[in-house]
Amino acid sequence: MPSLQATLRHQSIVDALHRRGNVRVADLAEMLEVSSVTIRADLDFLESQSVLRRTRGGAVPMRPRRFELPLEMTSQDNSGAKRSIALKATSLIRDGETVILDVGSTTTELAKSLPQSLVDVVVVTNSLNIALILEDHPGITVVVTGGTLRPQQHSLVAPFGNLMMGHINTDLAFLGCSGVDPIKGFTNTNLPEAEIKQAMIKAAARTIFIADHTKLLHVATAKVADLLDADLLITDADAPSDAVRQLRKQGLEVLVA
Image (cartoon, helix red, strand yellow):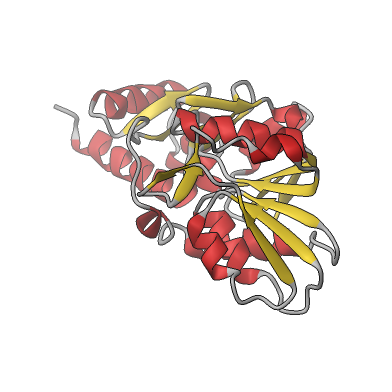
């Protein structure tokens, strides 16, 4: 059983993990004024209790890899961060462009943030809720990809979800993901959506991933793309500087909203 001092450190580590989305050994050692060896032992213990998952040099929260929450629930997580990302993303869209909007809570926020002043924009989406959000926008034509419905995410996927993507060319694609890692790249919780994301990348002249800070240094089940398959990642101001540094070191352009 951990000592009282260890228990207090564990609580501080968990609190920091919830605030930041991930933690680094060096940062924790400095914050708690203990050695890196002690912090690594603390992280090992917390991993054994299924509180977190160790990564190279730190840890991320322990989260299910094979099961998803409904979109309505994930939309409530880090809502302020997602709004900041969405506003930064909308500033990149110009009149007359054709834009892909992927399914997801952050892309949904992007759709809500599109200014009414936009003119002659075509939005291609596999998200039914995004299509409905943009239905009455005076300057946007909405094209829905078709495919098979995934109810919890309101998304359209294979079979038949990818057919349209091979016949269009777009200016921008805004894609969501479950994880961004310097080595594993962009990953997603489920395989069907990963496949359509790959088709979207091929259809777009420029690919922009949008992901809040909790996705950084996280690896999910399905590989979507390598880091350099993206032109830009937009994340929020709570993104740990070390995570951003690692991604930039691999050549990925990262914009912090």
